[in-house]
Length: 76
Image 1 (cartoon, helix red, strand yellow):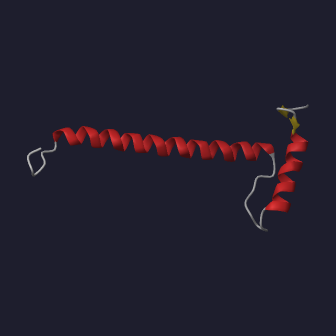
Image 2 (cartoon, rainbow, N blue to C red):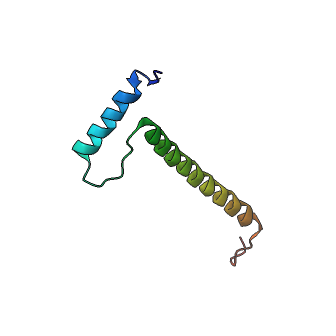
Image 3 (cartoon, rainbow, N blue to C red):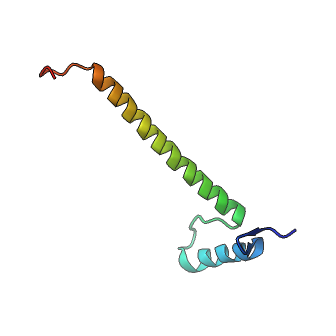
């Protein structure tokens, strides 16, 4: 079964990942060995970024809501 991402086959993409790991990264670096693990790593990173943004937005909304009800010492 032939599966492609753009014009990359599973085998050619795995060869690219292997070459990048051997030539560019220091020994022992954690790097995916196949397209599946590369995609999972990307999706995990994307999910963490979305969660960080959601957390920031939630904290900002809570701050804005609380700011309406807090009386400052200077009366403002």
